[in-house]
Length: 85
Image (cartoon, rainbow, N blue to C red):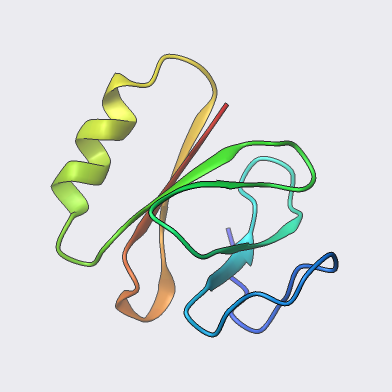
């Protein structure tokens, strides 16, 4: 998956602290601003953002999820995203 760091959501202006990328499920451009709770405007997947030192925690969380899910390593050392239904 190609990460897009300049993209913005069309429905709002994300904060400068947001991480921006294409949803791994549907391809919609998203901006994640918090550890959990942000959702994709295209498919409603939830995103959990793990920091750069939390790779093991992100992989452990990914492993326990039972439905559709994606693990994304963010560019520039920004951490990891676990996207899930």
